[in-house]
Image (cartoon, rainbow, N blue to C red; front, side, top):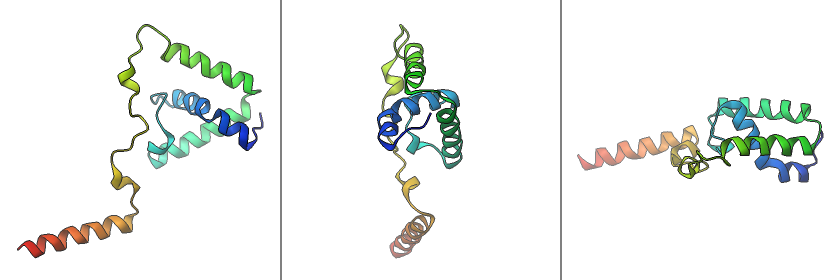
Length: 114
């Protein structure tokens, strides 16, 4: 299947659910919260899925099958799916250089207290 940029954007949430399921992640986990190695695996699986999937209709059927299994059932627990896209560790967003500078600032402020 070849997706235009518009089609990819329209199907991105469904693709994310499908690939998360393949990886054994919570199905609503955000790509941006994955570790670098997991992002690489996610992208590899995503490309494989897109290349092997015959149509958007099949993509939708795969998504709905997962939704039926994971969400639309009697055991659904909404608390399991809250804040899965929230990254609360903001230090992960810093470069190594920024982290080193923060560490230096912390050490300097500790030195000033003495």
